[in-house]
Amino acid sequence: MAEHKTFLLPDLGEGLPDATIVEWMVKPGDTILLDAPLVSMETAKAVVEVPSPVSGKVLKLAGGPGDVIVTGKMLAEFELDASLPQRAEGQDTGHHHGGGDHAPAAPAKTAAPEAKTEAAREDSGTVVGAMQSSDAVRSESAVAVGGVKAMPAVRAQARKLGVDIARVRATGADGVVTMDDVKRAAADGSAKVGAAAPAARMAPSAPAAPAAAPASRSTLSQSGKPMRTQPPGVTASGQPEQLKGVRRNMARVMADAHSKVVPTTLVDDADLHAWIGKQDITARLVRAMVTACKTVPALNAWFDGENLTRTLHPHVDVGIAVDTDDGLFVPALRNADMLDGGSIRTAIQRLRAQVEDRTIPSSELSGYTISLSNFGMFAGRYATPVVVPPCVAIIGAGKLSHDVVAVIGGIEVHRRMPISLTFDHRACTGGEAARFLKALLDDMSLPQ
Image (tube, rainbow, N blue to C red):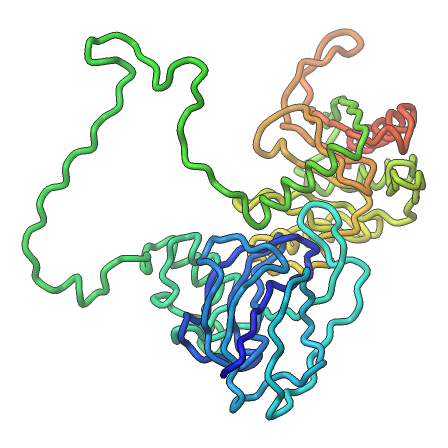
């Protein structure tokens, strides 16, 4: 009797309890070889490929695209094929499971090449805040599925944009479909999912019956009186949406921060009236934060609330909050205290591009010493941004405005930027926070 193996979802290196299925590379009944691509899974950081742990017939798959699988739970079941290469007994696969029973693998007929191991890391990173590290086999190379070569993240983006990746014109090396190819197809509508092929569109067909006009909604009843969609006290109906990937992790991290930080917020306005010419606002904000960190190091620190220890940092790594449709990313602008304005802008553009393409390394998503949320580029003046441990402070920059300001002998109209400073009051005093904010405002007020 053929032996079966249950494959549990491994820890994909994010320290997260689950991952979301993006795309299966096989279906039940298919035969798959050892280490061949099995499934693409979306974590809080990226879309990664999980290879097959065995060679054999696929018996069962756990869910479909969009389903959330808990780490350590069944991902797939196989019927082992002793005539195909199997991993040697006791050989490390690089997968780390959260527990569960495994059926024993068949003895290896041909020993597979030595499994690649990942170097130890202090922290594998996450999207918002730092998570525990773990080692795992990861693959983010372009793999041909259905005759189309593309990175897992590109396939996931095509699915989100409603693009049929099989109809996208590939411009990458060796015929690989790139992220830009998918975005271009989404913009021009040349590869919509479900759209008829060109030949099909040319085929004659009977005239289609006119579509029935959708019923219009009204706030009035048939008697002409105002009506409610639901009686008072009744919850409005709607389709619940399960949080996945980045948003799922963001919800966990924010809840954790809320339970572990004692936040206090100071607000004031940076006066930009003296600025000469056009200047990079974000670069000036980063420079002012660096100045404030050097003036009051207590806010450029990490705090361990359990052991009541504080670590002051000699360098300044700024976490830049980046808003995306998938959720919030916070990449780290490393060594901001060593960069000039042009270098800051170049580094931020690189980080934003990597976030958008979901190609940002794990190391760039953790370890920052203080963070910045420039929400004012959209709307809003003041805020209480969330401090994510182990950091002790975050700066929120509001929307620029022209305000009437009293000066000696009269009034003037100055361009000003609202600044909000939220800090963990366990780690620094109100006086330290106020001096930090003053140093930041003083630097922002300089002509250049």
